[in-house]
Image 1 (cartoon, rainbow, N blue to C red):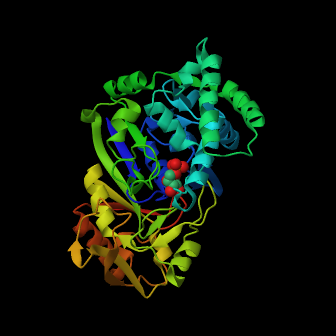
Image 2: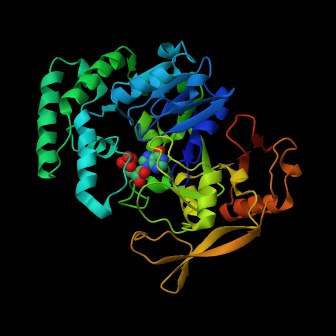
Image 3: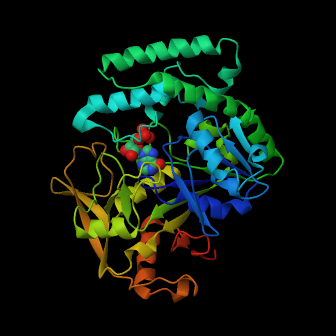
Length: 423
Ligand code: IMP
């Protein structure tokens, strides 16, 4: 069977910490979409790691980690990531498997990403510039190169053809000032290393594991509001970040999916452009950013911050069929006299509980409900019942609105600052 852990907001919900926390219950952890645009932070024993492409189960002995077919892989980034973890995980090459069908991010995909963003000017998406969009575009356009293709005799000629196509596109966007030659050197060196990893038909491997009673955790990247179908289009990433993406991104049938864990922060953040109804462009927003260290794990960019948006959260719980919720970073809201959550949107004088299809252009005014602050400190040691009443009220409100239990409450980045509530 397969369980899924995924983000319900605009990414950066803290999936790395929770995937790592959940992994002891599983035999396999698999990424099903996205690529090095992700930055999953893990902290334990005073050490901190950021994973981009490697699944978060890599630090747990005996667990297999699969980079699935739905992921896009940049060999340069993957190699850098391996360098960062290899002392901590000396057996990584035994436990890290990569799908032969995963698509490769080429140097020209990254250049194209920068060229497309530059051409968009003010309307840019705010992409991570990791080449994600152009790689998925080539995949669906049937021009992509998969990792398995690099082992074929015609790989170099296909590579050159693809690069020529990209260079024409880059020229038409009027983009200059890149050094393809040095990028290619780094790419081919890293590709050689990638080819030494275990490259597999991961769909067979996962299905055999399921047939043998093994447990798989599918680890999402980005967030549901960045999904290419249902997110705040066009300010989205280029993959299916929702639970439905697990089937195509790993090759497992819907009947094997057991539980969906939805993860969200006690407030909202978003990085890059696009609509953000509950955004706080004031001192409160600054304070959340500072206290929550809301700066991109991958790019270092400051994240935009705002109150919890229950309209968006209800929407993403519905789209994913979330069974259990995991709430992160509640401690960041400590010290505020008042905490707010949006319970409806007002658009042109009409109240709605739905995320509008034209979220980018609709003049959304969030309608807030106010809560008493949680005091100065939330201590994990006494368990849920020892937490302040005002905080427990906030939790009960969210559970009632979403009709879904909050099973795990995280009160800090370390593994132990986590309260698990009994069923
Ligand atoms: P791309 O995925 O790099 O093309 O970026 C598209 C949009 O998704 C941009 O607004 C990015 O900031 C955002 N994004 C991509 N990956 C992440 C992530 O892991 N966390 C948060 N935002 C992300």
